[in-house]
Image (cartoon, rainbow, N blue to C red; front, top):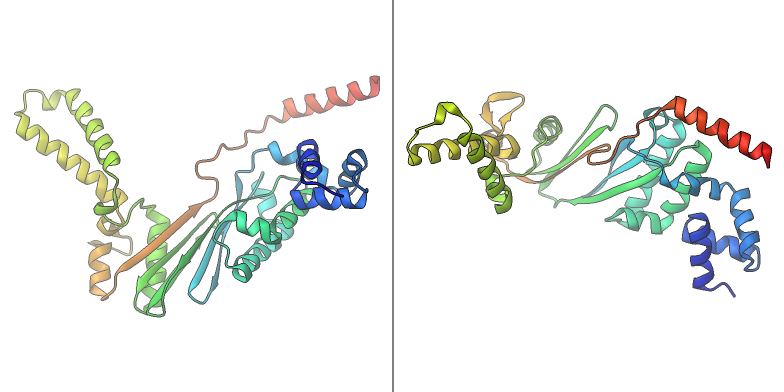
Length: 296
């Protein structure tokens, strides 16, 4: 009988996925050592060894199905692999899983067949492949999706606008991709962000010789103005519309008798540590490992 503790032990030994470990144990009648060899023979253990590598390249993709849009990021170690046909095929397969199972997270995708696909791709392609994140964006029948991908998917945006103006929705998704707003409006900005930004501007003002001797009330107005300027840069509705900088996004939407409902913007690798290759060191390490093996 294959117990949960056996599966856990094999996972800890190899780093392979739960279902792969269960399959390996079934094929080897519960023998841990033989299961390790089985995983190696299938290339799965090879994939697990790559789990500690940094995968901060890749592509973002959007799969739309009716009133649902699934935005996800699939990572690789190098940009070269992200252009590989097998990698782009995996993107399409992940999108199909999202649609078929109405997945709202990367965990749900992996649990519905995605884990095996990713592990197999890692073994076949030769680099660590990982599904970083998935987000479900929804709309109703009276709303429209705007979808835009920049540089083939290095940045991808999904937005929802009121009404059925597809061109407006597309333009807005392009705007969001280009300007990277953090919030829809000032009302959405967290109080702690405002407090932090106000503190920063106060400290800058204290060290500004031009502001020395200013009355406290005047200084407060200057600080407030600087904070508001910062908010206009990060709040979508206050930004100058990229295709017509003479109006804000809010004004442009009003002119089109529409409104923004929601938006999500993904950029490959944002917030992740980037891989920094030192090929000389890598070659030296490989040579040392080979020499050690020959001396055994």
